[in-house]
Image 1 (cartoon, one colour):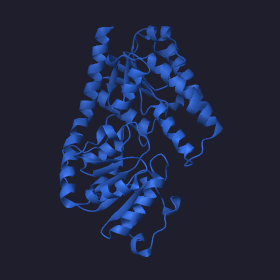
Image 2 (cartoon, helix red, strand yellow; image 1 turned 120 degrees about the vertical axis):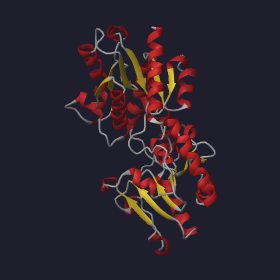
Image 3 (cartoon, rainbow, N blue to C red; image 1 turned 135 degrees about the horizontal axis):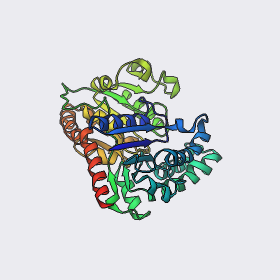
Image 4 (cartoon, helix red, strand yellow; image 1 turned 120 degrees about the horizontal axis):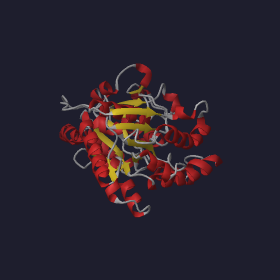
Length: 368
């Protein structure tokens, strides 16, 4: 089959959505398919918000000028990018139209509005106009035009079926395939108390909660060391520690050259109190390396981290999170959960993810 992916993000292998799109294209090519990828460069020379606003119109123009008369068998777009393309034009392509959610905007907006209500963040007036307003309408309209809908978690699937009346037969709950940091049949040697903190200084990824948790766990246990990902220095998060524990907190700059796979292998526990996720690919990659995950009970992580493989707690529940980290550092608990995490991660191997995707496409083609 010939695929075209149109993604509302820059196509960069080091980025989240762009990187996973390029990797999915690579895997499909390995299966003998032809794949083209188009990112935010379709909006060139514009950048920023203007590029985002223009992108659905550029997608419409691309389909009109390039994709009619059976050129492609599958056209996949990211959520919200088909709202301006008419159903008539989509029928002219004769392609299966796929819309993929990388994390439904409606759930993200709900979390940000709650954070603003609590005074944790401030939302600009233009956020309410576009990302928290018009964009939500774009997303819903795009999903209703799709032949196939890909969502990363069960909560999104339930929302699409219950509120938007999308047929369950059109929906596949599937994460993007994991890339080179995913370990296949990994065997972890030994246990330890090395904690990796994800998310840098982003509110969305739980940075404000992480500060209190890290300060407390280092004070409680002198055998724990912590590496905080995504920071060049600790001034970015404003954490202050006594001399007795400061030397046990280090930072990890993604530009350092060390691979994420190597980083996972030298840590035992991952702390990621994210406020909202589509899926949590970093969590899956860590689990594949046998790292015990302590994360938030939110859609995405909730679908991935089952009881025997890691720990879930409510956003803001620092007391329970601290207890979970201590349990994750116990050798017997850690060893058991580490082995279970590796086994569970195997069910998300890239070839299985892509196999399910292709199977649904073939089934929908036969129904047309």
